Length: 288
Image 1: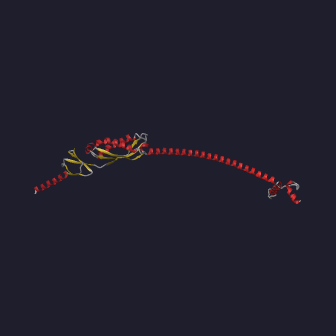
Image 2: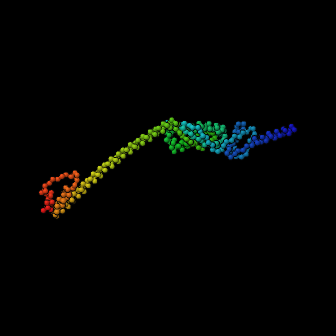
Image 3: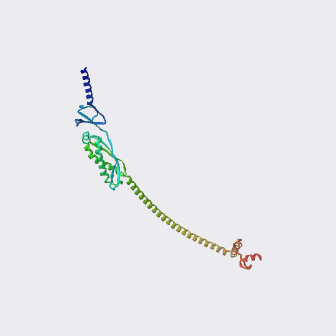
């Protein structure tokens, strides 16, 4: 009975040891085998593998592209403006042995790369003004930052795939000051534009007034010329008519004078004339 229990115990221990010796490397993993804490081999091919139980340990690292979202960093630019930069890194573990020896695990790497990212951001972005950082040239800045971090990341067995800025904001106090200055500049430009517009308006009005005076003067001049020519033509016609029949012309002019003199009106003056005057010459003739 005792032998039977001992045998069952041995079998259970053997099964535990057997299953402890087996491990699976998945498609998304690479494995570093440690023996008493020292790395002895790297397994990058997926599948079922065997290690020595209780002596060897398997550490798994991801072969996929990983992402690290860094904390917001305050950077002083070349124009002495402060900028709050929120950046992230995409990286890949390419050498598990170097990675284990340099940083141990992903948390250790994040602690190390935070300083690298901060230094690279300050070094690269600190050499350019705010206008460059906020322009399309920001892509080239990211490439420089990535190259700077990659030089150090190689020692960690890591390849930096990408570095990107999610957000770049001014501190609240700086934002208000800059917005105030921008508003003042825009108001100054608006006042200048209004002044230039008013000046141009005065020039247009003065030119229009000048043209108006010239046009009216020329029109009056032409009208006087035309009127003078008309009067001249009228005088000529009257003269010709008078020369053709002087008696009739005199009679016609007298009739016109009678018509104007005998018009009734409240404000018309009262005329006192002698019946023998030349004015009533044709009346006297008709009476005779």
